[in-house]
Structure formats: structure tokens, C-alpha cells
Image (tube, rainbow, N blue to C red; front, side, top):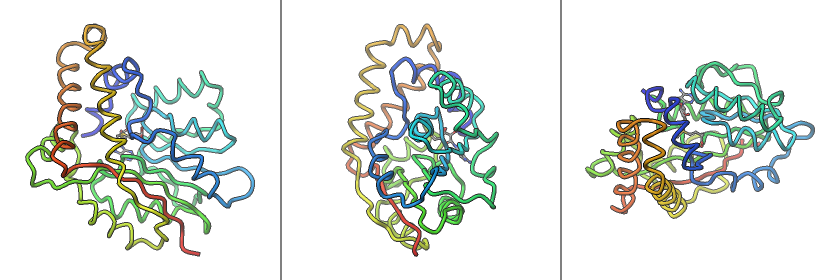
Length: 250
Ligand SMILES: C[S@@+](CC[C@H](N)C(=O)[O-])C[C@H]1O[C@@H](n2cnc3c(N)ncnc32)[C@H](O)[C@@H]1O
């Protein structure tokens, strides 16, 4: 259950190590996505699995209206508090639920599904639901893990994070191509992923004493194990991360 992982302790440890996004691209993908968006007027953005809300706030700060779908109460609380602190709270609707809470009648110019598919029971079905929520010119920005679950190190990641077994890069690509979209690009971002986790590991090591004071020994050990599992899986060369932008077929 991802609720067990994305709790207040997770939020506190990520605050401590200065990690704002859980996906390794952070805000880097958004300027391009904004330029590609063809909608006129206020952009309607859907953020599925919005976590601590850094992506939602990026778009809200640039005049978009954001619908943030996030099932974890702790993540929603963190996201809501930060939105207030940054003066964008009125531009973000935090639904009390995950993708299941999506209003089927709403249409969005841009949808974000950033490192969330791996938590969903039916990722291909979820992608279809998200694509169906897009306006005719709509864009979907998706990032996720890929890997070969037969490798023990990759299976260890799924156990540590409670995620479903990742598809291979090619299987994920095939899933994207079955959608009624044009895949504008789908690229391997494992290099950024490795750098992201190295930075988290280094920050956690530097601040272990503070982390234990904030979250307790068990929670810090669990987080350290999660981080280590990802680093070990990446090192096999059979686990990584990718990023795609898709546009609804005209
Ligand atoms: C790895 S984090 C990614 C957070 C954010 N997208 C980011 O890039 O920083 C995965 C998030 O997906 C959320 N999640 C789990 N199940 C979900 C569901 N059914 N619908 C939407 N989000 C879900 C988790 O609570 C968690 O906040």
C-alpha cells in the first residue's frame, strides 16, 4: 500500500534532504510542455499522483488551474500547506483521492503522470483514463520506472517501495503506442535518475542524526534501504527511468 510509504515521515525526511519532486526530472520538463500546449486561455492541468505538490505549484505559479489527485492524506497536507505558503492555494484543487477521484466529465490541456503508474493496479488502463480526460489538443507528460523484474535487485526495489513489477523500456513504449496518441518522444532518463538518488543518499548520510531525531531509527533505516535498493538496481544496468510526452491524435 503506497499510503504506508507516503506518510508524514516520508514528507519529513524529504523536507530534511531538500527533495521536492519524487521524479528525477523535477521541473525540467515543464517549460517545453508549456511551449507545446496549444490551449488558449487558462491552462487546465491534471496532476495524477501529485505527491508533495511541487509540480502542481509550478503550473499554478504560471497561471494554470490545477487538479491534483493524490490519495495520501499526508502528501495532500504537505502540498496544501506549501501551496498556501507560496500564494497559489486558490489555483490548485486537491481532490480527496487518487486517479479514482477523477471527474470523467472534466477535460484538461495537460496531464502529468510522474512516477505514479508503478503504484496503480492497471497502468495501461490508467493511462487510457488519463488520455480520455484530455482536450483535443491535449498533452500527457509521463515518467516512470522500467526494468527487468527477474533481476533480484529489481525485485528488491518493488518490495522496498510496494510497487508493481516494472515493465521493460520496450514494453512500456509498446503500451504508450497502443494509446490513441502521438508519442512525441520517449527517452531514457536513467542518468538523471541515478544523479537524483545519489544526491538523496548523500544528503541522508550527511544528516543521519537529524533524520533519526525527526523520524526515528526504523523510519530512517527503511528510507535508507529504499534509496539503496534503487541505487543497486540501477547499477545492474537493468533498471532505470524514462520520460515521454504524448499528444492526443488530432
Ligand atoms: C513516487 S510519488 C510521485 C509524486 C509526484 N508525482 C512527483 O513526481 O514528485 C508517487 C505518488 O503516487 C501516489 N499514488 C499512489 N496511488 C495512487 C493512485 N491510485 N492515484 C493517484 N496517485 C497515487 C502516492 O501517494 C505518491 O504520492
